[in-house]
Amino acid sequence: MLYISMKIKLTIALLFAFGLSQLHAQTKPAVKAHSKTPAVSASSIANGQKVYTQYCLSCHQVDGGGVPNMNPPLSKTSYVNGDKTRLIKVVLNGFMQPVEIDGESYSNNMPPHNFLKDQEIADVLTYIRNSFKNKGTAITVAQVKKTRASAKK
Amino acid sequence: MKLKVLRYLLPVVTMATVSLYALKADVNVVPDADNAGLKLPDGFGALKVADIAAKARHLTVTPQGDIYVKLAKPKDGKGVIILHEGSDGRAQITGGFGNYGGTGIYIKNGYLYASSNTEIFRYKLNDKNEVINQAEPERIVMGLKAGRQHETKSLVLDNVGNIYVNIGSPLSACQVQDRGYHSPGIPGCPLLDSAGGMWEFKADKLNQTYKDGIRYATGLRNIVGLDWNQQDNQLFVMQHGRDNLNSSWPELYDTKQSAELPAECMYALKKGDNAGFPFMYYDEIQHKKIQGPEYGGDGKKEADPKYLDPVAAYPGHMAPNGLLFYTGKMFPEKYRNGAFIAFHGSWNRAPEPQKGYCVVFQPFKDGKPAGDWEVFADNFSGSAQKTAAGRADHRPCGLAQGSDGSLYVTDDSKGFIYRIIYTKK
Image (cartoon, rainbow over all chains, first blue to last red; front, top):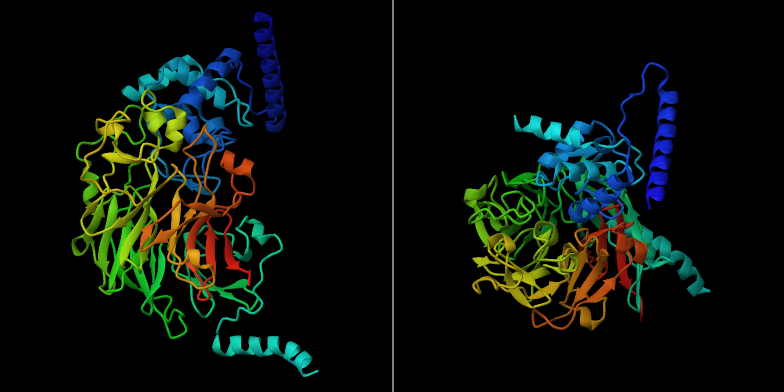
């Protein structure tokens, strides 16, 4: 069991390193890779999937593809793969303003999910950033905690 | 010999007639070999009239073979697309007008009525049902509320000069936090004063606002499909039921119950009716009006009996976007005065398989639903797997009847316009 989980961790870490080196190659030396990149853990993925199934799936769907005109897809969008603070805020505060993604608008209101624990938010975001054809870095509990604290100010 | 000449001459004569008098000729209308991808009852066929590559909402078809389609969003600055049918039933885009998106479109007494999400316009038609001045419609109604969701304004007219328009609820169940986890209902749901119902306005009076209209019926979450039943001389509407029973109240509803409930309801409305949204919903399994969980309900407690009963109920979340009472002569007798309902297809049934993406037939007798509904036109999605996954190729939305009794269906996903005909002699 331990062995398997370590193996998954290793695989993900390797995949991630590979992805990063590709990114590095594409963007040329101007951008330096962050030295402090949170690793994606298997337990985070597993726990994140549970949270996703319970709180996100009924709108964003089994495949993360969302619903045309209503609920945005989670696949390969800048909202999911871009700015982490913005993404954490979507979960904490919900999303109720008009949005256009790839030329399509989405109209459903997403309620705040601030009742979720920091760990649950970190896990579910790490899960979606590494599912539905996404390959992203992990979201940490510390990042969620910080964003939640700054939102309260 | 003479016959042979006639055979060759006839199409020419027909085409000449079409161009001279703009009359519709149905002589060569035959179904596509694959029935445009649809599954239909025995004796029916379908053809793809056009692919307009836009979000085609409601439509209306004239006896002269013009089709007016309302688009959800304007395309190249045109929110209403005009097509003209050739003698083979295939139509070409001939124009468009109205730089606004929306859903409602309807022809009555020499006018074409069309809605944006906040206004209703009308356009005078000539004796060939062509819009005379596309650039200068009369604005009939203005200033209607439109939230981010349920913003469309479906419309229909009665026979005495009134227009009926849906003003959908901007909230799914009038919760303090829309669609929120354990979020209670806003006491009294005050948004019902200006939304969540059907409003009545005069069809010929300009620039009417809320104060000129009547809240004809309330407690209706969102209506997209609606029609005037000529037999009953009454307004019939299809309500989109509320979402998120499980995600808001997981201890009261499991995912299976949340997929089936609440019913998508057909209501026959009279002035002053209250269908109970958001204080209740209709449970088509228990056949009861149930108190909403946001307003003290627990999934079992029955609602106040004062609320209107639906005349028919369908599985949850299938999204009835089109309603049409069939008055044509082309289809067999059983369809006459019955209702076709275009179910756009579900999303809020997940993780259970999705449902819908079809046109349903609801038999009627003496102006009331009589007997079980049945799927009439199916496979808009492309396959059973695509239906279950909610990844449909096409989504039926608007319905219209051609002057020959054909049934037209729009698709607001890719923009197909289908025509269903009865081919059995």
